[in-house]
Image 1 (cartoon, rainbow, N blue to C red):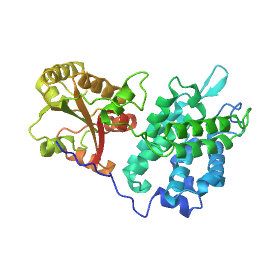
Image 2: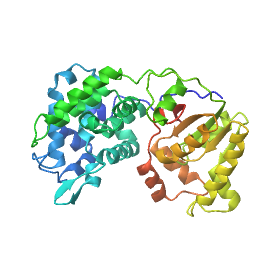
Image 3: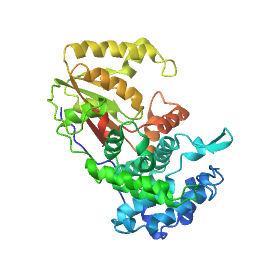
Image 4: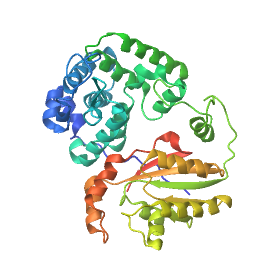
Length: 385
């Protein structure tokens, strides 16, 4: 089966990136045009690391520091705009993640939350943000991994974490963002975070992932490196995969069924929606029975080494990885195909659907979406429907 790799969306002259430049790289001007940033105001931080004030004040300082960096000034105009955007939204997860615990303010997992919050904002505000899919996802991943350059040394497998991040964002850009983040604060240990960043830059260059992903020997080696413990990235494994399994991913109404009709080439399809209909189970009810039957059918095909398509939303990485592990265990090359349609079109399709999805449910799915990353399968493709 052939699947065309396409760029999602188009970048026009209008949008947040153009506005960033036109406004003179000013957070205040940007927040005036994009009030989503107002939620940063008043969010408290631990004064041991952020004596400068709340999250908005910190963000303003980070944006100023960004524009003063020599490394930033040498970037292309589009990369400058994207990095400033990432700086402006780098702590967008803190309003939801911040709490007062054990006598201090803390924001656990705010980078993970921030990636989802930014993606949902930019997706729902597609026309106002005016970003291509790749621009939006790069900014989201810069938000997600902006703390890696200063904390990477605490990771159990440092090479793994750097190579994984390099799959979705140039580590050079992450380092520049982290440098601005370190300078845009009043901390008890000034300079310490920036020193960690220097070590990160040295290690990224040593691994060969400073500006691009690691050049694995083949797709099989790449997949195995990210799914096995203690494997060296420079290894070259024999590709012993035997057949193809396609895993669909994307919000409801994104066009998965249509794509399968046009490109399925007679392959068996395991559809959770169809099984739910067979069993007469409402989407609002538990899906355990549906999933178990789907897995049972998949195992029958896997034992016969028969290619098939797994058709479900698969919005969460944990869910995808459980399935990928199962399929790959039988010798399958697992291709993940993510489909996306613009937010307004998604709502339009839902209104025209006979059995509408409650809007609240649809919005919750947008908020929890975790974009498939390149390392998750043998191949990962993103397309617009």
